[in-house]
Image (cartoon, helix red, strand yellow):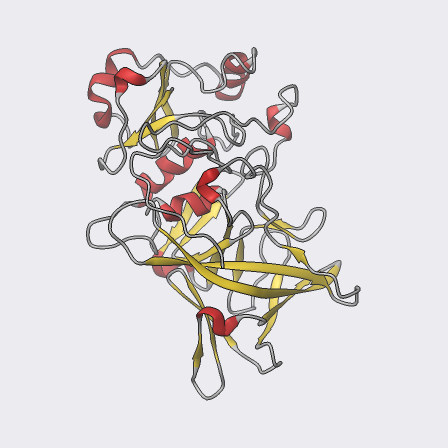
Length: 346
């Protein structure tokens, strides 16, 4: 049985991949740096350094699939079939954040009734079987809410020996108590599409079509969903616009310039609050303020979150942006006028 996460309010989710939250009352994430600090920032994967994205071998890293099986994703992976543990054909259906398998007679398999089911995937270099080994649940990180289904996927290359590997390896999450016991799970949800390269929300609602996200623990899409900054995570009291979701995405990935370059790594400590008031922190308990975030990146910048760790961070940001964003200064006093998220260094 996988452990269930408990709701954490005033939580700070700093990195695009693995926020290490030990003291949720203070909203502080302790530092568990996992990347080589001397490595070039632009050498990181699409979502940032230390990615725990769904991966099936070298180069086959993805976060979304087309449930209809008609289209391949951006790394040329597509679904070819879905069958039960006994081999019976199923139709793959994603309802908000739940994966379902529909039998020919209309019976819907869900939850642990899906254990052992296999989604077959095709790539130009190989074919793979993706097995659902367990279905459990966790909780949203905000509000009074229903449970969120979690999925433990394992894969193997067809024709290989009977050895299955985790689709989500849980990289960088070993010291992250937010994901205790479920480092290798994935959330599955539809209603939002992302451009991981440019760090954008590219479609929502009906415009998403049959695409759905496989969001491994610790990744930006997983955090966006548990933070209710997704279509599937919305309810009557937690509604966000596309631009608010994109502002949160920019903050999580430290995309200061808004061009898609991430300037953070797994586990870096940060505090933040958003304009909805769902999360907050005490400004008197921070070392310095970082940024106010809009859908297009940092509106302004005082102290980058990794300053002191990467001596060239300001130069790197200025080179990417063309110039450093202006200091926030007096903007902090009325920050919601300028953006959706405020971040600070504990």
